[in-house]
Every structure is written in C-alpha cells, then in structure tokens.
Amino acid sequence: MPRRPEGPPPPPVVARVRVRFAKRGRLRFLSHRDIARTFERALRRAGIPMAYSAGFSPHPRISWLGAAPTGAASEAEYVELALAEHCDPRALRLALDAALPPGLDVLACAPVTATPLAELVDASRWRLRMPGVGLGDLTAAVAALLARDRVEVERVTKDGHRRFDVRQAVVSMVCRAENDTCAILDVVVRHTTPAVRPDDVLTALCVVAVFRPPVPPEPIRLGQGRLLEDGTVADPLMPDRDDAGRLVSRLDA
Image (tube, rainbow, N blue to C red; front, side):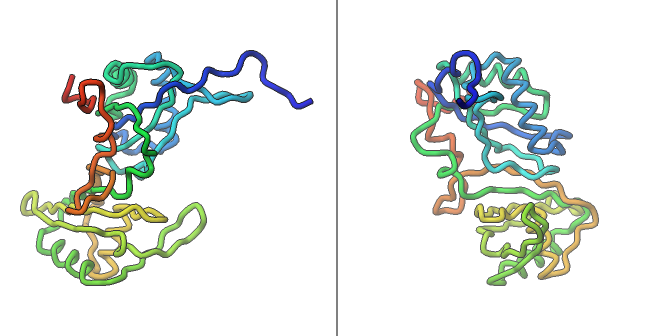
C-alpha cells in the first residue's frame, strides 16, 4: 500500500488574493529564492490563513509572477496567495506589510478575478538611471537601436548560452536628462522567452552604438501588466476590486 501522510488533509482553498509589492534599497540584491523564503516567514508571522499543499512536506500555496532580476529594484512585483479562510484584503495588506522587512513593501492587495494572472501580464515598463551619461550620447545610441529591425544579444541562461533578439521586444524607448551628468531611459518591453532584461537592452545599445556607461546603471521596474494600444502598461490588479469598488492599496489607508 502507498504511504499516506498522517492526519486529516489540509483545508481546501476558499479564496485567492493578489499582492503587489515593491523591492527597494539594498533588498534589490536579494535573489528570488530569498524573497520567497522571506514572504513565507512573513505570512506565518502575520497570521495569514494560508492554504497548504498535500503530501509529506506541505508548503503554502503561493504563485509568483515575472520576478525582477537580482540587483534591479521594482515597484511592480506580484504574487498570488491561496487562502484557507476569507480575509479582508485591507487587513491582509497591512498585516503582511508589517511582517516584511523594510524594502519589501506591500503596495496593494486585491481579490482574484476569473482571469489568470499570467494572462494579465505581457509587458514591463523599466526606468534606467545612468549616472555619468550625457543625454546626447544616450539619445544617439537609442536612435541607432530603434533604426534596426533586429539586434541579437547573447546571455547565459539555465539552459546554457542563448542568442535572442532584443529589438522585437522593445515597444518604446524615451530618453531624458536628470541633470547634465545623468541621463534617464524609460523603456517598455514585451515579455518574451527568454525575457528581455535591462542588462540585455544595455548590451544591445553597445552592439549598435558601442554605448558603455562609465558606471553600472540603476534599473527599476515601474510597472508590469497588459500592454495597451497606446503603449502603456496596465496594472493587472486594476480589474480586481474590493466591495467598495476600489483598489485596496496604501492610497486607501
């Protein structure tokens, strides 16, 4: 006879919520695995009634989406939680935010709609701050990249070395100056396989224009969601509302 875990089966999933959180400051250097472990501990400390998987090693039912690469800050990370009890989204947001360390900040929480989260996200909006770079140099490099139909770069992935086209993923690139010695690049990229990351965009700029910032740029993801016709990226939590018809976020606190 096959072995079975002792005791009753775990409670069923009765509700799901989606959480938007930020990764800021020094915590941008945490790996995704470290963030996942930190969230699991925070959920226990906050007393969130999580649903658990069955088997000999039950674990909380958590689904992650499109984590930003290690070293990149983000204002738009998403995770979906399966709950064993119904919870007020506002109370859950406050409790989880208090249990997480500063730098992992819960921004919004909403009940799940019928649409799977993965179907609500197909693009990201990034901002790259480039100290030591003049606006003219960045503008010329971006123009060279946008003029191409295809720009391939190479990156080591878990499946080995991969060559892929960055240009097809780029929806828009906008340059501006923070000051005389610091340029800003706002870029919207489609989610492809493999995903085009900020460092891939910088590699592509080097390929087409030998563009090399003197110091590492500072990337931050400002949003991820469905790409709209006007080129903007919609927050995937926006269709998810609380009973008052509002997004449950810090703005409502």
